[in-house]
Image (cartoon, rainbow, N blue to C red; front, side, top):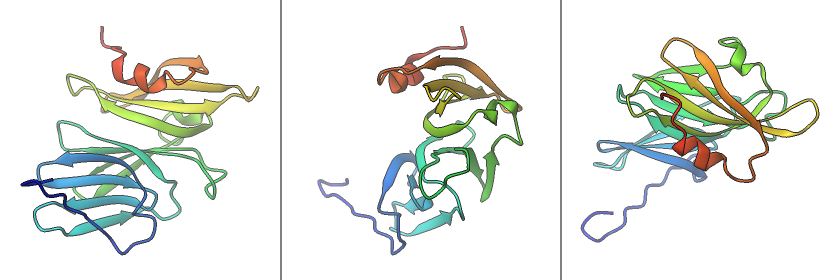
Length: 173
């Protein structure tokens, strides 16, 4: 939106019209879509699609103070049999964090609901949803400190409080 006019950015790639999260970095607009990561250059209207082969849809996005873009995925059809993952992206390098990287990811995560960067840029906090063996829905807050992942808290069904909790909890005190 500039000078009272909306600007519409379009791609010719399937599933990029389903934008699930948007973050900005200068004149770049980063979008988490059902097709992968789309980076728009707001100055000239060009875009790059970073398609994620066989990957789940991306639900959420954040940018830390070091310029690392963080994305969270969901395990939805047709991606059955895989867990949701957290992705980091910087300088065209994409890293996928999963159960091979940490025991935190051994739970059957089905959705990374939100990602935030703490107020001191020391941790990336992810709100994740998963089902236990009893099929009760659970939520967890997991954190990455630049070296390793840890689970901060886990609790059963939150009745819609998870986004509120993820945005307001202060685990650094």
